[in-house]
Image 1 (tube, rainbow, N blue to C red):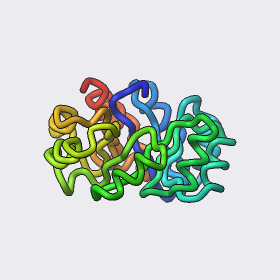
Image 2: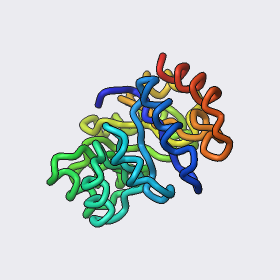
Image 3: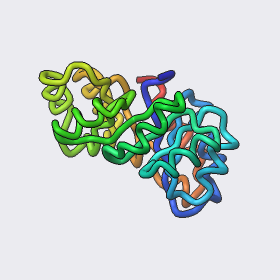
Image 4: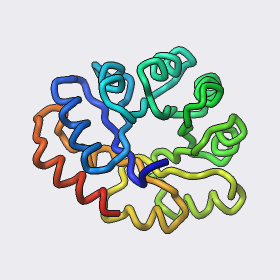
Length: 189
């Protein structure tokens, strides 16, 4: 993993997808483009180093890897997608929340366990998970605000996924200046 912050892009329109992606990557953030977003695969193909999110099936994993995804993110323990990514040398961030899901994701070979939605359980939950399960590398994702970022890292998360608090409404308004300010602030953590 090259960074501590993964910018999570999802939207219903691809009009600002590439310009927003470039702003985020220029700030030094990793980028996850969620597959349900129109133009997601084309954006991943155009952006060196972008990852694919909401990878649910083996077919999703294959399509994302063919487009050049540098990593895959699953919303849950999608064993076929996890195994496909790992078998093809692509890191996989597998979504999990419960202790059973964390263990299942780890045993399935996930490179990282994405605790989602992290804001609903707080940073203490990462610390609690690390007690019985110290082996997985945890990434906290979902509703984390910039002011809370250091708490999740101190609790043992190796990285954070930043969605709405970072992305805002850039995919509908095209406010790249506002995105640039937020991206630079997140890049400093």
